[in-house]
Amino acid sequence: MRLIFARSRTVGSYLIRLSTWSRWSHVGVVDGGMVIDTTLKRGVSSTTLAAFLLEHSKTEQIDIEVPDEAAALVWLEMQIGKPYDWTAIVGFVFRRPWGKKGRWFCSELVESALIVGGRRRFREDLNRITPRHSWMVSV
Image (spheres, one colour):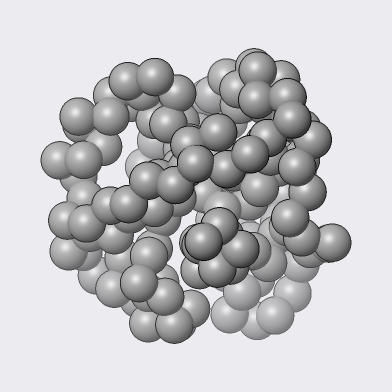
């Protein structure tokens, strides 16, 4: 499965990178010419790769071995339309597990898709995974 890590020239991206000590503030999954990800504005959605690249000032794509990539992609498509999990982001600040079922932030969505595809990269607490964590275990 192809992951795409990204950052942009926005205050939100800068704050995420600063607070997580990361070069990336966002991660999504590339499926052909589309990217499935979740944002505060759109929730879980699918956008063209070209539009995604225009939204971000820097990106990098990495392929991850997944035993059942098709299952992971079907599961991701089933998440489209679900809302962004802003309460989990607030939980980062207060170190509380405030994530809500059926709501997602980017790295939580990506790592959950990998699990559905048969590739678990973290033991627990997916609601605490940041793009930095996903990046560190990807390279």
